[in-house]
Amino acid sequence: QDSIQGKTIVVVTPNHIFFYNQNLDLKNKILHNQGDVYDLQGSPDSRLVAILGNKKIMIWDTETYK
Image 1: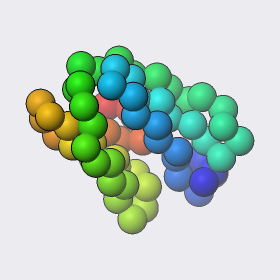
Image 2: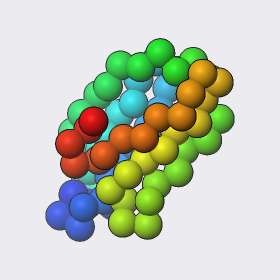
Image 3: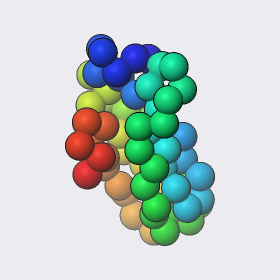
């Protein structure tokens, strides 16, 4: 997925969320305290990413990283 089309590759670890473009260039790295991550889903337009964990559900905008 490339950032020109508004798409992002998302990788989640127990403590971080990494956002990459198609070329695997790191766009942002966010520290979180989610713990276990059970599921990750992206919106059809790749603008939003929802992460379900053992403590809460987080929703991230892949353009603003908020």
